[in-house]
Image (cartoon, rainbow, N blue to C red; front, side):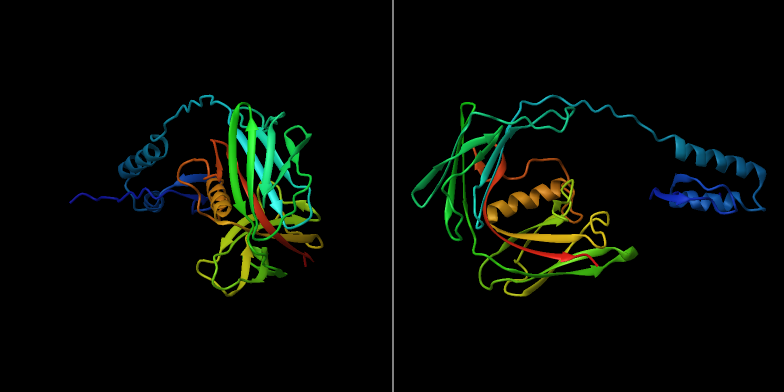
Length: 307
């Protein structure tokens, strides 16, 4: 019977080859390790050594394919982001446009739009205070109130509604150690019993929000209704530095806004490991074809010095 060597295509990374050889990084399979053991054997006949060496080189070098991905330009879309809080205003609505994949990451503002927010029979006509930024005048955020947004921009109409949930207080912030001495913030609060609650967490270090979307997460009480919550916030070690002041902002958002934020985190790979299988736009609560979201939410914050 011929000797057969199973080759397993479960590729990993190895640093170095047994036998005191020079360290380097190489892509290898489980079968490749078996071949290394056989090739290093003193009892291996010369002709088999040559055969297996050729087989290794074939496996490592023969499976390459260059894929040319062609990215086509797309028509710009309107992006609308608006927030009403239970803190004092004025509140802002920003309007901009999408850009091509190859363009710089600068979204052109949309000026000259008509922007109105209505609640309890009162309509506030927003003023453009800087390019693409529109500010309220008389509105105040109140828990339980519903707010309706109307935007007329470049000949199209966009609408959205959001109801501000009841506030939940963030009690305290402490820390928990992880692997490799990593430090994670923990948000502690009492979840109200009997009603669905949806939370957004935003983190700041010395007053500056974490960059590149880090420190932004969401949570719902579907499996923990009415419990006291110790919510672990998965932070990047570069953001958590001893002596800095960490501020955690906890927003209570409605279900539609939670859905948007949750999908956005999954698409961007920030949803605690659950990345979207295919790129897609998150489900917006704005009608008319715009991207973005409109949120009426309550805010609770706590600050602590990082140990």
